[in-house]
Image 1 (tube, rainbow, N blue to C red):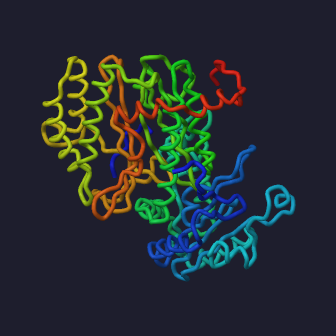
Image 2: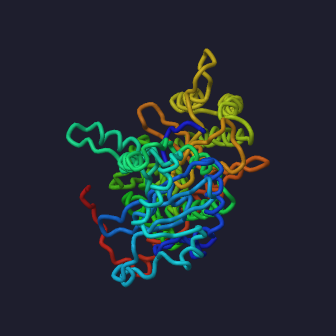
Image 3: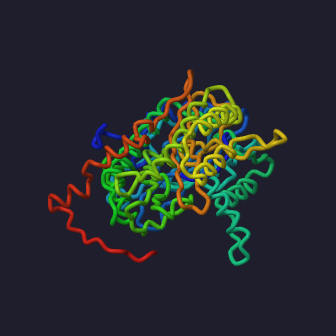
Length: 488
């Protein structure tokens, strides 16, 4: 997914899914207990208090906010949580069980011993008893840590909700504050002697380094993303619309167990490719155009982010081949420079040396392509005075597609990020952007999306195969009239 954020095999194979009856089945209770224990160690004698998201106002499934989910795995509306650093105890407060809701969606968490065992929490209490528990904290004037930034839900990242909240608050015809601001105000009123501290930095530091179980879920999201892109390559042909490519990938994602999407599909044909956030999806694929596909699923509240470029007709033209090849070699030079325990600046400095050598030895037929390659390399050079950056390496990926930032200046094991540099010719005639998921390990890194073709020969061989739509048409089972739909 296009963003300049500072660095900081079968479809039907089973995948973990977030339970909608109260507690996820993505991880066992001990995974969340381990996270809460680390929070306890960070808040010391204080407490951490979190509020879960609300019920949805419309007919859409409940997805828990990321910070609350991270420490509980609980998928219940308007839940409250107290993590007590002094008592080393976590208590969940829930709305009362209603027979009507249970009859509609099935059993869900309640205030009982069975729910305590399922979640691994120390206690579950009625939500209307939260005030009594808070009064005990207030009597001692203990520090209270709670998230300050707005909650992040599906297909969102912290930067998105922060900017939206700021714009809403600054709007002279709106001016609303966030739920978090209202909650903090209530906490201050109920516990005036307590110092209210921001919990987000503590949780973000924990979230930045992924556990083996988190890596497994992100790996699955990436596997599905790659399979979806490969199906799109097989399906694509001139005369299709961009939204039809989305349909092929969505089938793969849903068949593989995706709960939702990591972000809206960025599918761009030809002239739309230089626009990093293009997502209209209504353009017609034309022979001779390149197509960029950037979309990934959400698996159990975890995301992925993979991008590939391919020719609409299944064959690169000679000009496209020259342009794509030099981009790919420069991209691979950047990839080959990634090392564990080093900074992003060190990686880019190393990559520039390799890139200069590649450009010097490449046979360019068009000065415009050479200028695009030179401009691409220049992005990664230090400024002439040795200060500042002209480019960034990529962005973190985890529960959010633009996840919490790396807490260290170096790349350490367990950190997951993408690289996604774009090379666009003057005037926008040609533009290419690839993106891969990088997991830092003890010895280097693993490219989680390396199985998705990037070499021209591999792409063309894959595109020569029949895709889902062609198979359905041949079987006479598609039956859906194709027409241009109005833009929303």
